[in-house]
Image 1: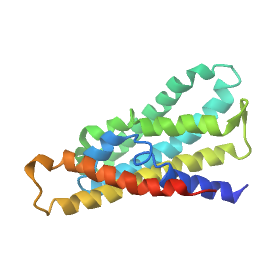
Image 2: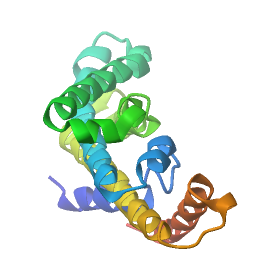
Image 3: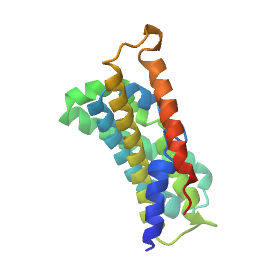
Length: 202
């Protein structure tokens, strides 16, 4: 197994191709849940779990079901079903184990189901780790790693954003910029900062 490939996946998914700050996917929950650090970190961990688990399951479905039966055109709908199932599982676990956290998430926890970042990872795995409908060596492990580090990149963005927004609450900000407008300005500046990583070459 090529360790350098896993390092490349890690750096790429967390910094260079960060789904929020570079690809602009999953912005709804990014803006909605990043007001406070605790819910933001919890959402990041939930998304990381979903992206990792769904990456493994969708890779297996693509490899052992869609390709052998020549029904790869069902890729998107089958991936969405897997993601929706995992989100329901996460939602049930959080509802039972941490009701206060479940209430803090509000509508944003079910929105992981339609979070295009999660589906984006699954589709990216099926494109990168298959060549002419054949899996590359170590494809399942790399797909799992890509799912995990995509979630880690999401978590990093949520953590940074929530820290900044908590500090901004202590400042005297004009009423017209409070909350969402200022959050978009901060997100834009963070995105510009992350563009600096795009110069990395491997």
